[in-house]
Every structure is written in C-alpha cells, then in structure tokens.
Length: 240
Image 1 (cartoon, rainbow, N blue to C red):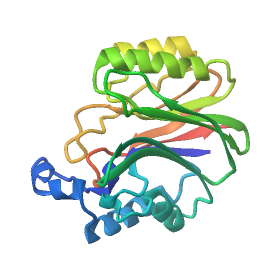
Image 2 (image 1 turned 180 degrees about the vertical axis):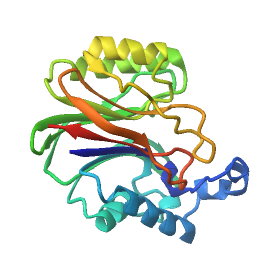
Image 3 (image 1 turned 90 degrees about the vertical axis):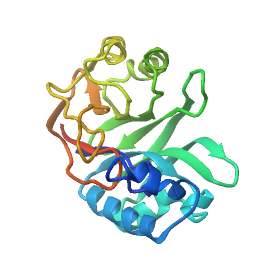
C-alpha cells in the first residue's frame, strides 16, 4: 500500500519567499494558475493508493466555488474521497483536509482539534484495502503547547486500533517533544529519518510526517521533489 501526504496550500503555488507577497491575491481570488497547479498535484498523487491532503479549499471563492478535492480526484482517478471542513472565511475560503483512496472509506470521526485559535482538524477514516487500516489526516497548530494537546487527543483515538497511520502537516519536527509524546501515547513508530519538507524550494524543517502503529512497517520513506506548494509531499510504502 503506497501512501502520500501533502499540504497543497490551496493550489496557491508558492515557490519562493517573494511569492507570499506577489501571489497574495491568490488567497482571496481564483486564478487560471490554480487550475494548472491542481493538475500538477493530481499527477503527483496518481501512483499512490491512499493520499492525505491538507490546506485544500472545499469550494470557497478563491477556489472558483468548486471543491479542489473533486478536481484532483477526477484527474488522479481516486474513486473514494472523504473531506473535513475546519475553517470558513465567509465569501473567501473553505479550509479543509481530505483523504483520497483506491479503496472504500468509512468515516470514523471528524475531529475539531483543541487549541486557543480554532480551525485545526483531524479526519479519521477506515480504509477497506488489503488490510483494514485506520488513517488520520491532520493539520496541527503552530505552537508546541497546542500541538501537545492536539496530538494527545489524536493518540487516544488511534492507540486501541491494531493498524493505523497518521499523516499530515504536524508543524513540528520528528524530534520535537509533541511528536515524541505522541509516539509514546499512541504506541506508534516514527521513521528512522525524517526528511525536511518546508519550505519546498529550500527545505529546512521536517513538518510533514507519516507515522504508523508499532506492528506496521514503512519503507521507501521520502520527501518528494515537486515544488507546487510551500510544502513538499512525503510518501512511504506500507508493507503488508
């Protein structure tokens, strides 16, 4: 089972620091460049069986009032999709997470993660693949205190399941205290190395991760090379 996680930045397409300024209008309006970027994303994720996407727009004005998940799934061929809406900016955007799969999905929980500033979430689904796999697609807050609290809640949802993976933008390094605490509380396993993924054009920080339950094994763990978001994707092969 091949897995991938990616913060796609709503197809804004930041490729260098100055794009945060010069592409700022893409935060509020739809552009033809986003259609091209969504096509790039779809091609990148096509080979993977289960994909977790963060910072995807579910149909706000900046997405042309169409869910970016639908566009990507139609192009990538993933037949099964689950989405989670976490923050709405009226008249502008609908922020969310999504899981795309080759196999049927069943919703377990749409978790709104705790924190001082609302809008972070974890979408938990069960995948009916070669094995029954619980998948958590998450996007955490920026602060360590909030991350610790959020991962505590996610761990409690996962640790009793024999086969699970947690994928997403954790906004913290594998060696950080929140990640180490999550591994211990959820009875999980971190990869032996964690490649940097942010910023995509010159990665220095390992913010994006795939973590699995202790009885599973991940191989071919790597960051992708695509630069169509300010994060790079991370992929792995789950040995069955």
